[in-house]
Length: 251
Image 1: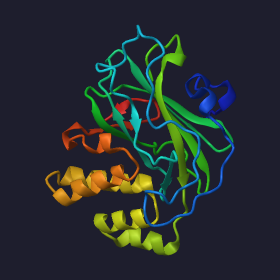
Image 2: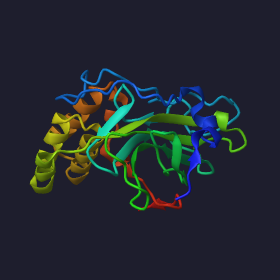
Image 3: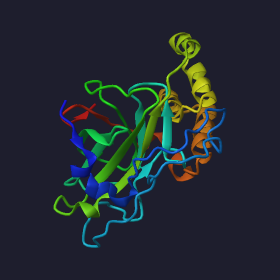
Image 4: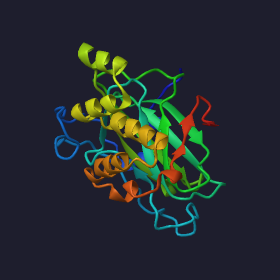
């Protein structure tokens, strides 16, 4: 697989001065998502406005791109191909999305152009099976951009954050191999595996959108990291969004 260094990637225009590749103190794993991960990494959970007032990227200019990640910008996972979640505004169909992932050394592992969803709402993407899996105890930097003007990438609307894969113990692997989805969810919460908890809870909500307990869990999970604006979106706005090696949208 061909890689390029971050410093020569087009993503430099997207991340700008926010990308700092020094790794900060490693947060401890504990029981809740609210205040236990106190050490943070540089990132942006909520996009700003486009720098060009003449650029029309969104049907509603007041709706930002939001990454559903903790306030410290770090999402922990127990899997080698986690799923990232976003709240997207309605995006002009002639625009595109771009997703990129860097390893801890700053190498661009892959960068993919994506077709935006047809409607505003929650969407998620899973790291592709065809690319190399995440290594345990490594920090990976990702970004998602709405490319407003391909000729001026400084006008992008973007969010960026980090993924850290935590190597599960043998006991945890056994629990994940035999437990129910609800048991998996409880385990992910206990281990602060934010990305996995959010994905599991999202799947359960899709399977039973009328379950009030699941809705309350969803709202509480996002409220704990001050993303209430995303938790209030109805399940009907959830758009499954997966990427393949060529960056094409998959059903």
